[in-house]
Length: 116
Image (cartoon, rainbow, N blue to C red; front, side, top):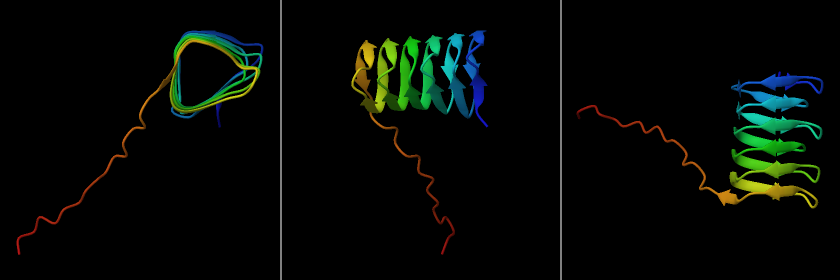
């Protein structure tokens, strides 16, 4: 179940969730989550950090996400740091698109340390 900021809500302060966050209203503060969905009428003023961001509304601030999808209705003012990005025709972006290398997969190696 996602954390939802409804269209008639305005949040001042940071939002942190280990899961999905859906914003339809206004947030003034940083957003940290696993997956962000920003509705077409939504507004965020602050830094966004997540694995996946689906943007349809307005963001003023830096975005740090592995995967970013920017729809035609989105308005972004700030740099987007990403591993993969998709930008629809009509989207407005004022800032830099900064490609980052994918995080290396963490390996847990098991070794046999018994003496033979």
